[in-house]
Amino acid sequence: MFNNNQITNMKKYIFFSAAAVIMATACMKEEGNYDYKPINEAVIKLDPEVTGKLGEQLVITPEIALTQDAAGGVDENRYAYSWVIQVNTTTVREIAKTRVFDQKLDSLDVGTYVASFSIKDKQTGVSYAQKFRLTVTTAAYEGFFVLGALGDSSRLDLLAFDGANMDETEQFTDVLTAFNSGYPRPIGKPLGMYTATKTNDYQFFISTTTGTNSLDRNTLKWSANKAISFLCFGKIPDNFVPERFWSLGSLYVMYNGGNIHTYTNASLFNLGAPHNHVRGEAQPFRASRYFNVGTGGSASVLMFDEEKRRFARVIMRTTGTDAYASLINTVTGSKFDFSDVKMDLVWMSRNVSAGNVTAVLKNDAGENWLAIFNPSTSAQAMFQKMNVGADFASFAGIAADPVWSTLYYASGNKLYAYLPDANREVMVQDFGEPVTQLFFPNNITNTAFYANYRDKLMVATFNASQPETGGTLRFFSTFNQGSVPQLKPTVSHGGFAKVKEVAFRSRSGNL
Image (cartoon, rainbow, N blue to C red; front, side, top):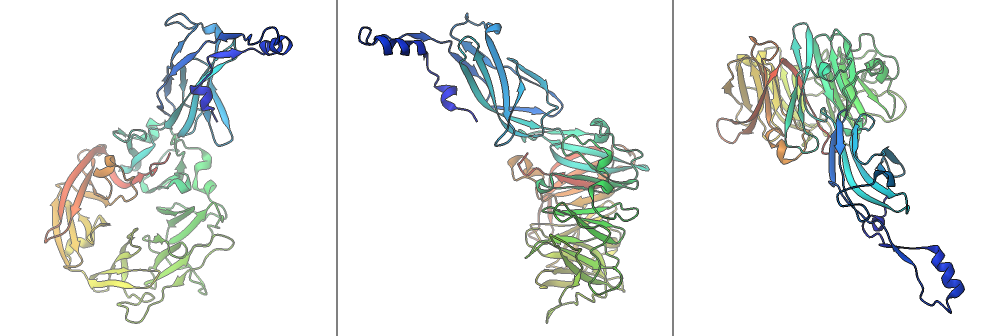
């Protein structure tokens, strides 16, 4: 885009073409007669890295020294200025024509740009330019979105991380109001929330009892075409309000009222045909809200049939028709039958790194069983009756430690740990106030600043005497070698409503 020789190694003298003519016609008499004139040389000092926030004023003041201007002065009438950015490999865009850049960043998308400031001497036509990197970030760039219950409504808060320096946080209460999003009211009670990855353009979904909507990835603005009915193709089921989401590549998998649907920009799946339908059977089965998306030879969705109490799996297609589910093959020597478990599914989650699924099941006698298996290979690593107390029946949430094999669950004010290898339960901590949510965020950027959050156990508690600000997010590192799991607090943040859902919006180090 820019010529480095032009920037740093400009010639100090201009050779006038008239001199060439004179030399050609009179070289015998005037051999070696050249006419050199000094030019107005410029030195530009500019920060190599500049960061601004979307929607906020950015001021950039370059230092310019010119050899033919008075010391410390600049003849403004003599010069033309230009600020340009490289939008892509083929497009350069001018964003200002002033010496000092002083503009509100409302016409640029979030991203990092190669940029340049140049000054042109109108008398000689000579230009000098200085390159720099311009990063446009946003207050909603990266961080924890917290969807809370507030009476009959919802409130979305944000614990934002600085997308440029990665060294500080800023907390926003009620971001839909703070960012003037225009989200439709009444908001309704919270059901679920999801933040997608870069592959899916950082799409952001909120589901409440009044509907499901998306927000602009940078500004958090809402518009009518952000409603779920505009985002999906095909026939939309009546009262379609997904309460659970999962994305993989360009796929969105969504759970709504016992059905599991997929939408993808690539294949335009028809949402009128749920995936919880075994090929050859007349009707779809009622799927559990706990489903898992995983990879193998191809993307797949693992589901549980609540009526016939069996596992089923659907391979995601990339073109053409809707996909049907198939039952998982049970190999010889298995500990249970995938197609006839004879138990209800209580909870299920996938270990993202290992590919195994951890499931908690309950039989007709009220006994809880732990199953760990690989749905792609049908291998069953563990199937055992869990030695847990009565509080397990009223758990507020379960989270599987991504490093250790421990299951954490909460009931009332207490946090418990279940150790599969020892098959025993340990009460880890009493918070003195109800636990409303817990999980291990595993999509956080691997940088030093995030060490207090990445792969840490997040426990959300709520002080009911402060309904608007009684929610607290507490983060713990876990260590489970020994008889009692160890929790070490890393950081906590308060001021939230009653936490229903927490999602970390990760840019994975990319804008």
